[in-house]
Image (cartoon, rainbow, N blue to C red):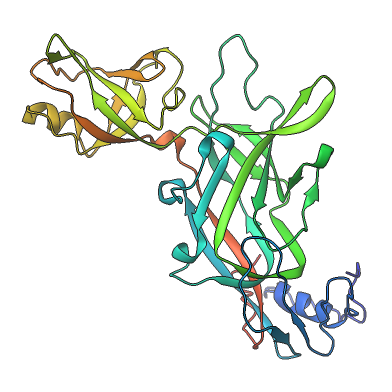
Length: 342
């Protein structure tokens, strides 16, 4: 793409009025001036078809013909780890969302740009004898499975689309701030039905620079209360069943006052008072990690509970949630969305 817009009219600056530039209109005018790119099979000057077929997110169908009467529109979805696809494997830094479901059962097509902003990310805990996990203060995000080979190429064959600076927030989370909040695809992605995000950090092993996946702690796990001598503990103890992840709450030992906020649902023991305390809709605090899968909740006495009972636990500090925007080129004139598009 040319680095400048030839013959671009000047913008008259009028005091006390808005002189904001319409980024969609500028992009359209630039695309109209581009020569046909034979390598990609894309041309915008006189109308052309594009039918990218690489990757797992392609969809068969008629070619989309681009004419001079076209524009751009945005699709924005909210990616929340609570609603991730069940095929997600957090242990290897991967979070998958069904994009069609997020977008009211509609696929997103002809995508030419991704945008992402700041968001919270769970802090990855390490032993006190080791450096903190985000020592390099960088996180990289690859959006896998795209019908495009356009990426930022990193060392030793590593690939990513976004780079983030890591900002410490507290002992439970960090803030990820993109160094550049957009990624542009010169050849539009024909169709996309899922978002497969892979989070990575830099690592250096024997002088070789590379990246490693982030083991993301689960935000939703199955638990069961424990008993000793036929009755529950005081304070009540729970065991994490699945997924078995030792870092969902914290390192072994006291979690520090008041503890780690949790929400437990559907705990139905033989004691209504214990059930009400555990299922408190306002949430409760896990206060002590006994071992890799066992924790306590101070203030709840379960010594009248006479069996093991299961429940679901939600850990807010491990949630990953952010809006994600996709800009598509359309075979119709649009209003260019200048009011909402940065």
